[in-house]
Amino acid sequence: MLMINKIISSIIMLSVVFSQYWQPFHPQDLINHRNEIIDFEAIDNAARLREVEFIDRSVLTHEIIGYLPYWEYDHYPDLDYSLLTQLNFFSAELDSYGNIINDHNWNNLYIVDYVHERGVKIKLCATLFGESELTVLLSNPDNRQNAIANLLERVISRNADGVDIDFELLPNNQRDNLVLFMEELSEVFHDNMEDPIITMATPAIDWSDAWDYNRLAQITDGLFIMGYNYFYGGSNIAGPVSPLGAYYYDLEYTMYDYISKTNNQLDKLILGLPYYGYDWPVQNNSQNSETIGYGVAKIYSQAELMSDIYGYNYNQDSHAPWFSYNYDNSWYQCWYDDSLSLANKYDYIKNLNIQGAGIWALGYDDGHDELWGAIYEKFTGSIIGDLNFDNQVNIFDIILLVSNILEDDNFYNASIDFNSDDIINIVDVIALVAIVLD
Image (cartoon, rainbow, N blue to C red; front, top):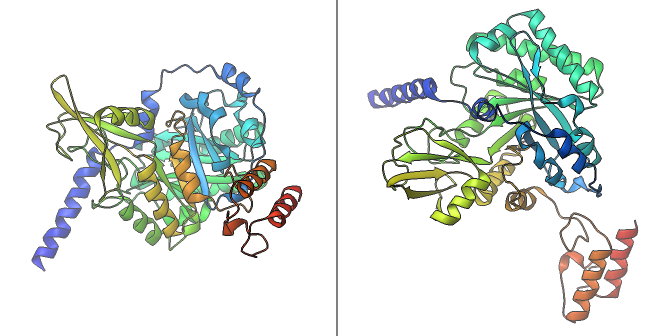
């Protein structure tokens, strides 16, 4: 019994010490890009020239929600909208009094029309970070109402689909006020919009018991769980940003905590996963080496390029890739997520039977299609007759079927044996033509 008490005390002490130094990622990412200048108009003008292709979103089995930070705005025309259901534009920055101090050109952006034309919902993400800032906002009824009114005006002015609330570093004395704010926001939005979508970004670990997951899940359409930054820039050792296993605090801990505290509101939980990692200066090239300085964030495209140069390791216990390298006689170690690690975590999401998966952040793949491939592999159902896997059934599938029949008399694929006669022939071609014409 004494040993058990010591273990429990150690875990509590670890939690207290870790929470004092741990930092969330969204606020730091915003700071890192604070001074970037984006030519929104030029990007939008190019996007207007894109043709709109038909997208059959019925193939997606789960919600897929991605954040697009304003500094990644140039990537929005190239996103695979067939594999997204919602996009959160990041962000409308609030002050403590509920004023929007910077919406990053939201009222003039073409992205809302572009996303809608491709069948995806778009929400405006509202941000405010810090204990004192959130206390001033949430504890004052006038400040809360001001924030809600300003956000509603922005959402309605652009015919967007709803709002996402990203409040981080919440003090525990504002636990009930946050619930009150979300109740008030939900009521106002539902009074003024038809079926608004209301979501929240919520922490992987509730260090100070500041979050009423159960009530917030009931109020909103979904909690976007930020399942990353378990290891962060200031960590004492290098390790996985989003571990699935191997550590006390990991995705399994997080999801058990949420499922328990929300009384199994699985349909309200979205597990957000990272398209980034950290590169730390370390003592040596051993796995989980001690750090000797602050880690630098690396988006997926950067980390993947570096791994091509320096080598690739995969930690099976935590489902995370990593590599070490020596530069200028100093060791560095980088951990991140790739298509393999994300695919494993997507399987975990499917096994949990929760609402879906999330992405921080869209654009961080910078044209690497393999991350979209992981989503396609894990979150799409098959479309009858889609032989070339382009999410459409059309003349190209008919041509492919005829070509396969002509090239191989013994060609057989049970998924396109439409009349179940164990033969692929002209009868199946006719059936496929009927599907195309239907």
